[in-house]
Image: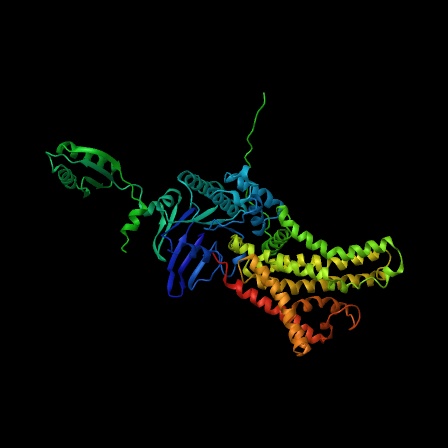
Amino acid sequence: MSVIETTALTMQFGAQRALDALDLDVPSGVTGLVGANGAGKTTLMSIALGLRPQTAGAIRVLGLDPMRDGAELRSLVGYGPERNLLPEDMPAFDFVKHLSEVRGMPRVEARSRASDALWLVGLGEERFRALGTMSTGQRQRVKLAQAIAADPSVVLLDEPTDGLDPVQRDEMLNLIRQISEEYSIDVMLSSHLLEEVERVCDHIVALDAGVLVAQGSLADLIGDEDGITVELVEIDDHPDSVSEVATRLERAGLEVRVDRVTLQVIGPDRDQLLDLTRDAIADVGARVRRIVTRRRTLEDLFTKVPQ
Amino acid sequence: MTTAEIFDRGYRRFDGDRSGTLGAVRSLAWHSMRGILGLGRKARHKIFPIVVIVLAFLWPIIFIGLAALFPIDIFADELRPEYWELARFPLVVMAIMLFSAMVVPEALVRDRRNGMLPLYLSTPLTRATYLLGKVLAVMSCLAIVTVGPALLLLLGVTFEGEGPDGPLNWAKVAGQIFLAGTGMAAVFAAVGLAVSSLTDRRAFASVAVVLVLFGSGAIVAGLVEGAEMSENLRVFNVVDMGIEVAPRIFGAAEGEGERGPEASLSDSTYLAGVFGWVGVSAAVLWARYRRIGAV
């Protein structure tokens, strides 16, 4: 079953179209909702939670209609908001426990689950500290803990790595991966950073100004590997060496893109690419700075899209 | 040799029944009540509620104490206030007004300022059930000072053998005390919540509640007594409308005990006044919350 499924989902705020006829199919796993700020990520999450009605189109989350079955749906969904605004004088444990109760956990169960969730995100020792004394990194973890404490089927995390340094970011992404893999909770996270979505997500939904740019599995969208990148060094008394290497490779039936001294060599078989490239360089007598296998990134996906 | 074992509880699925909307409202109401009364919070948050509650209970405690120390008829008969009269005692009125102004805003304003409202709305709570939880919390807190003193008096005189005759009469009086206290709590909760919904600053909300409570009384006094306009305008005095719930529930006759000038209002005019205040307050509250708070 799809986690989120929409048909022609449209949201209009006055003259501004926040979501434009989205046909989405979000399967199980970790899904990254990418796009620049203002692309419609938060709007999509808020419609998925049944907090505002869409202008047109249909949406189903876990098979439920968010507007009609909102209360039932939201007891199965954990949500981590983007803002880092939390009750200053409340201990993290009380905060997580209370929200678990509101999401339907019996009192005793809520207590133990709040503890477990805070240990899981690495705040076990700090769970009785007031939220107001916590750093941004710790607050992000608390928000994750409250989202997963009531055993949701799916969690929606709005910019869960916002404000984190690179180490904290890695830890947060690992936690999200763990939640999905070990506890089989489906995750949809929004981010404006392609790189982190690439690292942690199985599926991508890319939005630009409310329009669907791409969706699908990460592997389908960016491919496993797509060739090699060769960076040569200019040789003063052999100025044509770069173009000669390119010509040889093209003659061998490969696709080559030249950007000054860098060649993108594209072809189906990587071993063959490497051999042919090595031979071409040797024959021409060119000088190599480096040869790396090339992986397409989401960056390519976005830059390919006509603006 | 000892063997140490790291015990990883890991993450457990939950197979039981979720408590749904009812449980969410109950949890929210309980949590809000604790917040209002300062339970589980730092000492400085407890001081004010405790002072107000002590004020409200001062009179019945003094009376019961005196009656116990001096078992003479004067305490049993002439000096003993009617149950509904307690709500008119200046200390109790003050306690109710202080609660409405200083404590009720706490229930709403904090959630809007500290990010809890959007989080609550991402749970089974909706805007309507969220407000229901808050109304329950605020009314329960107000009931401490509207029901509490009269109930304490009833228990006190009962233990001293001066209570209502027979369990039926006793239950009737207790029921009236609950009903009257709940009615009073509803009026003050409605006004306090409606005013608090209009601002995000707790201090502003408190001042505004005080202004509405005192202001409505001053304006009505000016119109009715100063300008000698219709007595029916007294329905616009919200404090009197709230306090008057008790004698009306107990069916006190006009002129009996200490009552204010609003005792002269007909039942229908009075009811229109009370429901008017509650209705308008509810409408303001809903109009504000219908739109705000979405993520």
